Length: 72
Image (cartoon, rainbow, N blue to C red; front, side, top):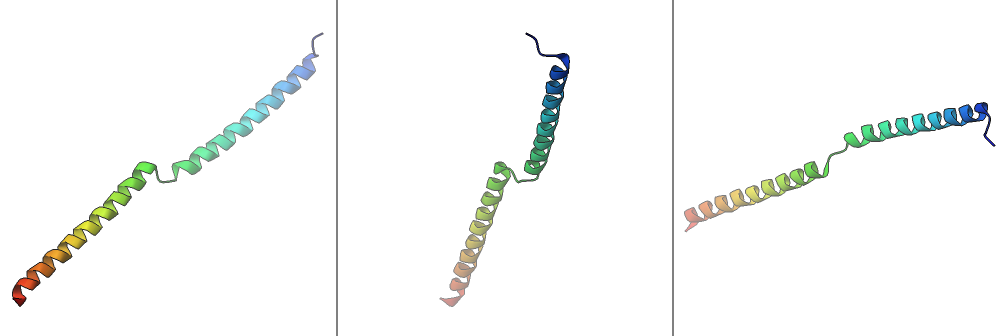
């Protein structure tokens, strides 16, 4: 026994509506996640901060060592 054509059309339309909602949600999800920083960018930022801190400590140590030379 085959379902009537009207039932098949109704089911097809319902499936199309569900797919459209899923596509809309997926588009919003992609848009939201594209604004977030990537893991690579985060690690680049962390490495940059560590490098700047290390360079700052090096400069301070060099200045203190240089100033200590005037004291003795």
